Image (cartoon, rainbow, N blue to C red; front, side, top):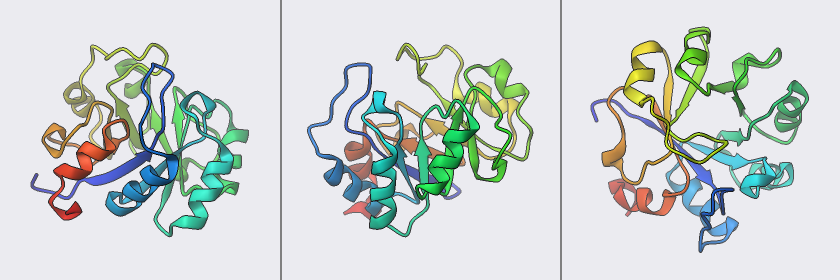
Amino acid sequence: MNKKVEIIAEVKTHSPFGWFSNKSWDELFNVANKIGDIISIHTDSRWNGSFELLQKARKLTQKPILAKGIHENDELIQRAINAGADWVLVVGRIPKIHLDKCMIEPLTLQELKSIPNNLRVVWNSRDLFTGEIKKESFAEARTLYKRWLCQASNIKTINDIEIGADAVLVGTHLLDFAKSLTRFT
């Protein structure tokens, strides 16, 4: 890696696709707080998240926090910011409020093409509705979007970071990823 890639460390105890961590939320938070430049806290109950956990995290760190969820309406964005989020992930749409505090996750490359160049974008290699790996790659997304682009999902170690990623969002494999960092020892 030639440039510093931001680490968005996700506190995730389970996913709706059958994955469960053997670590508690608090244990995962401690790892995320140690290695992350930004801490990602789920607000969506399908990932065992809540706005209360977001408030709890805000009390435990001074680092920036990303409220991770679908946030299908602007009221949920405002609720996340009120609960202490510095950033809010918004999936499949461009919100009407707080664009300067939103990271947009398009569902397809076609959606990615319509995102204004001044926004932060998260390219997730996993389909959030099925859990399957998308056919479209990060490299394809990078070709289409020249500004800040975060690689998300299926990142186990630093060796999985794609060329051109400005950031990585690491959740399921947080512990393995942390071990792969020389600064974590």
